[in-house]
Length: 31
Image (cartoon, rainbow, N blue to C red):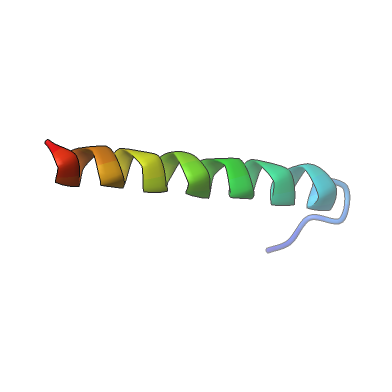
């Protein structure tokens, strides 16, 4: 499943996606 060419960008995108997801989750709990 892991692509050799997209390994570096994939990790970065994954971290950003997780951060945004956590932010949305926190905002939902706040509201």
